[in-house]
Image (tube, rainbow, N blue to C red):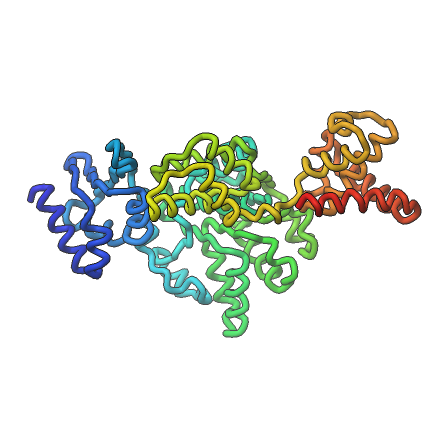
Length: 467
């Protein structure tokens, strides 16, 4: 059978498995381009990046099964995506092989209590990974270089005991979930036999409560003890749940003693997880603790340009810079803005310019709710005390500089979620004990010096006015 005939046969099979409207919308516009029998490489042309993404998101399982049946086992699919119809520009994108593998796994028990039956059939374990969050689209920058490098090393050598457990922490929107997903996806690519599971802390707790009600705690623990690579997101959700903490402790201990890989993510480091028992915190900290900072402006620009290229958009550089500056260092905000711009440009057939970007930013980014940064605090405090930021970072012991330095540390501890060690690092590279001492000094002086108390409150009011 010729490649063209094989593609016609594939279309016929697809048509039998989808509605007429779905077929006409998503599959009829696909153009067969080529098939290399020796390389098992199939190339299909699709009319836009949006069609490509929709096919990969919703029909990858159907496509995979049909193409294996009509062409050959192990067929490798690539899309030629039309990115600019007017200038006839295209981009070839290889389908992620993990998409098909993960999509074939049935997702019918995600919110149910795992039982021993799950452990008896490891091939049916749903890893719950997002196949689109990979290392290929996780852009490296100064804020994530160490965690990304270590994460990739773990993914390539998951059985090594080094960096186990890996504890990643950072503020919301900095890319923690993407990174831990990328580690899991890469492990499944390289070691498909391994039992990899991604679970949010909240879902774990829901499963635990269900297991308790059903009298199936032993089954619950046994299931998690069969995992080779356990990835848990948003660990801080357990701060007020001692029973969940205790159960996880036993699971963690079993996996760790048996050389299994544990990866966790949180919005704060272990030392700031107030309410968790020491025996759990010491285990969190015995491997590698890696901080993910919010991406700086340059990394935001790089992330935007990568997504723009992938989506086939045309956005002027000054608009890209504007979006990066307004997104508050949040990758989620960046993606939301780009998705909105793409929707507007497609629906209204208009170019993306500064005016459109400003409209979208107002709706997509909560600028008024932007959290205070260390730079915001230092700038405001230094202006109030009429000193320079450089002098606050210095070792100067002049009275006004010392006061500005101490107030900056006090306000950073009050208005940010940063640990003391991080605050000290950002204020002239000082240690956490200096920060604690400074905060104590400010608090004590405010109790006896009402003028000083009014000054600090004046600075806090200026924060609110800025926001």
